[in-house]
Image (cartoon, rainbow over the protein chains, first blue to last red):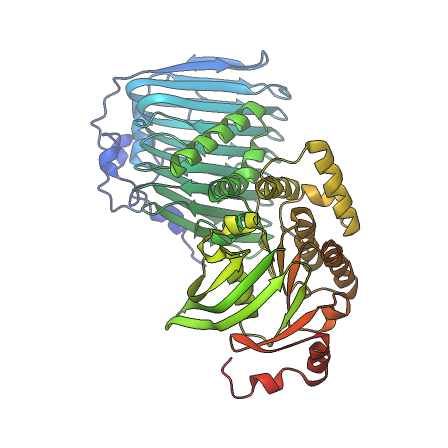
Length: 375
Length: 253
């Protein structure tokens, strides 16, 4: 077992709030080697000036507080620091942050909805979602429109709290979106996220989970449908810092068309102190046509032997020929068989969302993507 | 009367050292109402015959013909063959995650019958067919073959057979991996379909055990990619007593 985590040491620079602490990446760095830097439109090298805008609409139950705050607000940055230059650029550039707070012990019956619509140009953002002790909330983060954006999003989950986050990246085909999610999970708290990526020219989501105390639980689910020319990258890091915590990671993607590129990096680190850890991660990709490319890298590092269980799994398959054959052998035409298989492939993750209108929209999106692939 | 005519069928698969010929000239005619047992040792090509008839892309037809009522089966896609009335009960049914049995059955029935079955009669039809196969109704809500036991998978195949009512049913080692109760239930299902007199059955098996439940009209011994002997039910008794050894000696497997 490695004494020093390569997950941490292989990064170009230690985490920092200051963009100046990170060298401009050139593409060979471990954290950038899959990303087409020329399509970041300057987010990585300081040339992207904040000249654009996003329209933000927050629809929240009464118990929830929504504030716009300055950079010096003490709640900012508690869940983690930027770990790469683009995230640090966002942190150095944002002017106002949004803080959405769910008070302790509030159990929300309706989801908090935050819709972010890009209106062109470069934007930087910082948002804090803070869920008080024993509170329960569902948050739907919706991204549409066009912008070149880098943002940091914090999820501070109080002791015994439960937070479910659904983040939908349904951008126009020209958008660029890099987002680092910092999740800090309190004692015996649960965090569940479903990251759904359909749109954009380049989307790079980087959820990072840390446990503030024992007994926390993280379920990180994701699905993506990458079509021709799109680059969709999901990099996850679960840092098991405390004992008796659990994490379950499952991302599934379908790809079709020329130069569709999906990247999935699943780093799980079980530190020496994190005895009793139970972790599992999985990434499955379904390549529907020629010309699409997947880079899937699960990485598990264990610094203690006293764990409950740990397992990484990654598989990229051609379209499931045997499943297709099984359906067609019952008279089902090829197109319909493909639709059934792809819908089925995503079904278990779609069911995780638990917000009916978002599930329906997703299924409709999926159908539209499939129709485009068959045409 | 529906008739499946297989004439001089040659089939190969892509192996590491290039294409490998598995079927070497199969001749067989199966008529509606008849049951043919195809028996043979492992590796003789029995399953290749089954999958080739269904149109599995892994197998390349290199010669011969297959016709169903004069229509060229080999020119049809997999789904066209099924809609034309060819049914393959698979030896190893595969899991289809996220697709429920009820959705699968209804989609299949819609495709094969050419129109969606009326919901009310359909539900009843499925329920009754499942009850006959001693399947728990909750089964319909599970995903196809996901976590099914060997017996459940085979019952599910026979359930499809009963609901889709094909002209030609190819049963690929349906008996393998079944305990005696499951074998009886599955065989009774096959016999119900046979009793309709509307299906020609090709029963592919390694063992004679299933023939105690499903009585064939014709028995064929398959070895090294072709039928090497044909006869009546008495041929099965001979195989039971003597095994396949006399057919495999001196041939390549």
